Length: 406
Image 1: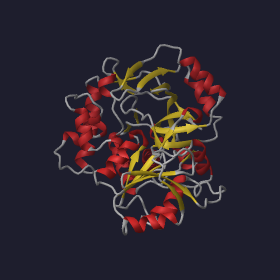
Image 2 (image 1 turned 120 degrees about the vertical axis):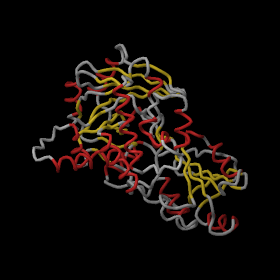
Image 3 (image 1 turned 135 degrees about the vertical axis):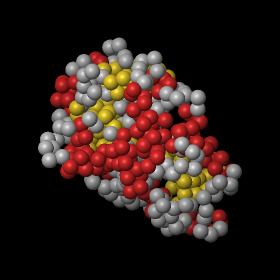
Image 4 (image 1 turned 135 degrees about the horizontal axis):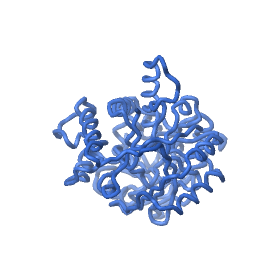
């Protein structure tokens, strides 16, 4: 793996808590506007620039990309963001409750993505990929990092342990209660060399960001007759976490309509699953599903499981898709269907009950979380998971460290 120190743009120390924001893709326009209300320094003015335009503005219009560019430049001009004098690598910790994880903030080479050293497990959607391509190209910057995972490495762990004993650049608790701390590594070259021994990294979150970064780099590479491979456009912003520290939460499903009656649905379900009306709302192990319907939680156990040799078919999300969503509910493509929605596990099973009890959904499925081992196995096999298979928490903040492509 090829990582490189970079000259980050980062918030002034006295502004960091006001500047950093949630990622662009975890809030809609209304939510972003509410979070940024009364705070002109919020980075949501960059990653969700439509909040500064009329409400009926198309989020994919030229005006949004241009406003984001203007806002980012204004942050730089006004000293809200300051630029490092020397290229650096950073240690970034997040603590949510008892869970603590340490990631390394670096720029990663697009060739590692193109050659498969940076491995994916999800399919991207063209419209979202094109949005990120336009955003990065117009901004000339990576404003939100890609979330990468790697297999634990003793050399890297030693450097991380030593660096967290030094004085941090930032230490604050965000409005959601997650504690964020950032340090700077004293010798980036040693860490760059250590990552040179890492054979592969895995996109945990940020498939559209990584794909778009590679394509922007490829476009600029093709336009540069003197291309060397070391130009800034060859690199994109990422945070790399060791596998052992990461936690995947469930990504639950809510069904908005049925093909037939509830009775017909239950009969079809009983042909493939043992149904226990036990009131349990969360699966206790892989291979179990909890279903909420008619005000009652039920545990579903498949009567037949797929061969464990297929890393995709054996996933719980695949079993639900192949045995329930597609054959019984007619949801063959969850990405495009209007009959299904998804709820991150961070919201708890009470959120699923609200969907059904309010009439917004007819039935909800509580899932057992996909494991990091399963994610790595699928990516190593060059295969793809069904959509919405993983939900990572805590989320990386945007605006904490920004990488420009110049």
